[in-house]
Amino acid sequence: MVLRVARRGDVPPFKVMDVIAAAERRRITHGDLVFLGAGQPSTGAPKPVVEALHRVLDADPLGYTEAVGRLDLRERIAQHCRDWYGFAVDPDDVVATTGSSGAFLLAFLTAFEPGDRIGMGRPAYPAYRNLMTALGLEVVILPTGPQTRFQPTLEVLEAHGAELDGLVVASPANPTGTMLEEHELAAVLGWADEHGVRVVSDEIYHGITYGGRGASAWETSRTAIVVNSFSKYFSMTGWRLGWMLVPADLRSPVRRLTGNLSICPPAPAQAAAGAAFDAYDELDGHVRRYADNRAYLLEALPAIGVHRVAPPDGAFYLYADVSAWTDDSDTFWRQLLDETGVALTPGTDFDPAEGRHWVRLCFAGSRRDLEEAVARLGPWLATRR
Image 1 (cartoon, helix red, strand yellow):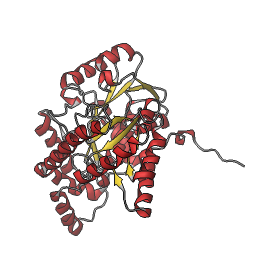
Image 2 (image 1 turned 180 degrees about the vertical axis):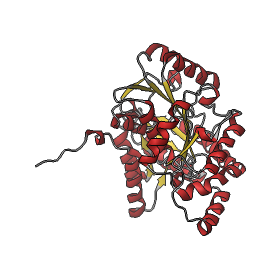
Image 3 (image 1 turned 45 degrees about the vertical axis):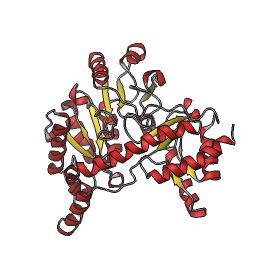
Image 4 (image 1 turned 30 degrees about the vertical axis):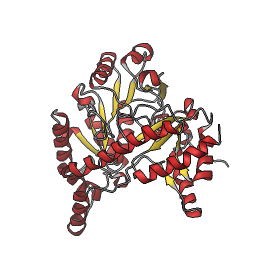
């Protein structure tokens, strides 16, 4: 007898995990790895968080917390929102989650029914598409590209947004780093409210911007779901802690579901994470380093022939067009790793159609690593023309 395997698991893999595995093999066998693949800071948690965790481990049994997170943490998050954006947030608006991934799961489960049509631009973070597919939602790819700075603008929605039930926006976005300006985001949210479309706003790269801050959806609309995280600006990826701002009509469903799905987010991370809001100076220092790395790559890549990149307003990525050398970025990254030790992420992770012409570089590491990557990449590309 053959037992059934549910189709919801039949989604594409998250390819960056393949890059990480292959890169680790290269490190072991050759020792010459230059890793620009994973989307995470190269720094650890800020000093006040580490110190807080040491104190907690000695004094707190670290049992279950409230399903939506410790009240003291939610109060700190609410204060952070008031300090950064200037809008009022009640701690009951805040739900702590197991990373932003847990927040997206709760958002898609509570806001949409199977068969609902959810719009998103491309390229985009692959877990949006894969998670929605697994939950039985219909993913509607909107025609975004260089002409819209890879963002679903009001003009795109007016032309192609008919019969949507939901919309995912990310500003700054992964993998492009592009942002919606405050007035552009407000226009998108106004259109969504007018048409009864629920917006899920990915704001996990807020704090990592170049030339202006990121606008939050809750500055314009309280019907939107806002997702944020301690992973990126706060440099705490492995702590697996995020948060969401939840509209009033979804509070009760989110509370019920999160209690059943995860009991609560990781208690040690919750107990220490509030101290991250005492570390803005340290964290802004990381952003200044990212800005320097960004400036270096925007000058160095054209010098080796890579002239076309998405305009990175924020985050710590460059999304680069490599169509002059390949129409198969999956093969491209593997050959590059095998022959030079440089690890990048294929664009097909973010865009199964046009991503075959693109790769993503993460510049959250050291300048020395970036310089070494360029020094290896330039001659390698020259041999492929």
